[in-house]
Length: 360
Image 1 (tube, rainbow, N blue to C red):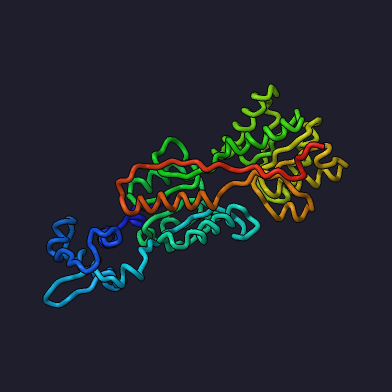
Image 2 (cartoon, rainbow, N blue to C red; image 1 turned 90 degrees about the horizontal axis):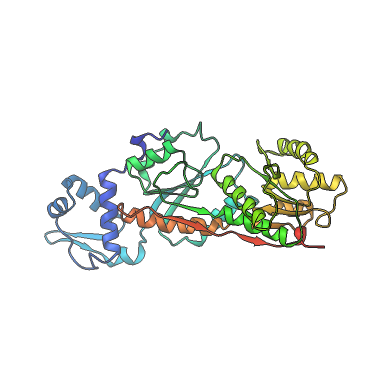
């Protein structure tokens, strides 16, 4: 559970950000005198101590200059040289090491680098276990906003909404919570991959997916079945192979147990790196050629798998860099105006056709 005390934004931070944004937007032009401490306290319904603290931060950043006996003025130096920079925490779920071979992490980092001038000072936190992650030990009040890179539980979403810290998720939360999120359209991604297999003459595809209870995987299954039904192919639940838990050893065992029971398949849509690795090796051991006997599509683009297998794999590429950039843009608007309405946006994946699914 996220403790309320850990995520509330104090009045000093709120006033500082409001004044900083007012200067940035030109409401207090360069060279003009800003209202007195007393006037600011009245205008923003806060104490003079809060005003002094906020003005002190703006002065340190060279946005303003205090002139004895005259007042406080907006400085050109700060407006020209000091970008408005908000401290943002980005929480990403994963048990491995953040690295270039993981498409989610690598493209998230790419999105950060591409938007280096967007006005954020990002800090990435890897969440290895949702149950044991020390939410309550983090001083979230020091952040202007949050990016949540996994599916929020109802409790987590309600906590964050209740305390008012701006945040944007990278996946639809559980239930019908009203939150801003930017998600990849996995339904369309699985659909276009399945359509490609069917248009290539394959009539008996299987979908090797991850945990079916997850929202993103349920969407993929819907897209898979919709494409089958559209082509007049039976949407048999036996076409779904759930791979849980997901690691190298367990995945290989599931593949060797499940695929022999589904004889006659001519194509495979496979989610994840270890599942693709284990499946292709299983097919090769049994003398099955790719793509002549079985066409293969990997959901998401794990470059290390193609390199290790020496097989150019057709992949569904998820646009995570664009996803993060869109989420950051929404978050910026929410930081500047806490009363912004919730925003829901979907980003479209891309099918990259390579040798593993070509029609021979």
